[in-house]
Length: 124
Image (cartoon, rainbow, N blue to C red; front, side):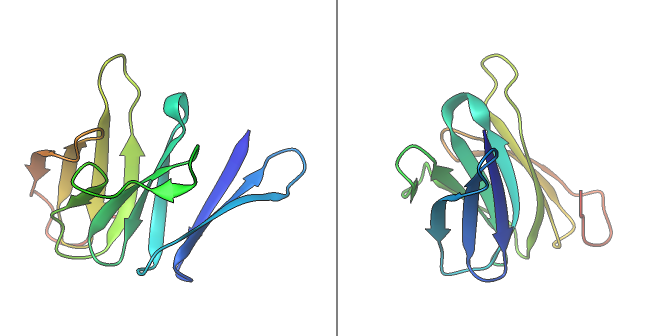
């Protein structure tokens, strides 16, 4: 298996869960604040300080670029992410300091819902 961590040092690191050796390092221009894993196909999602959810392909070790890779719509930090694997549902949900929770189609990057019922930052 794999363990992953993100931080304000603008990167994501993955480790082998048995040997604890670093497997991969992913670099970005923005600090990454949270992660969600879709183990079925080796995809990792991260949320950053610019309000963007990014998609990373663990098989290639690269960020998925283009409209399928970036999910942008938050106006502030992305504090939490959940990636579902319910049958054919490929959904990512993100919570932000902009007081919204957003739902995305994980494979297309298309925003499918915005929940605006919080009055302050959402952290989970």
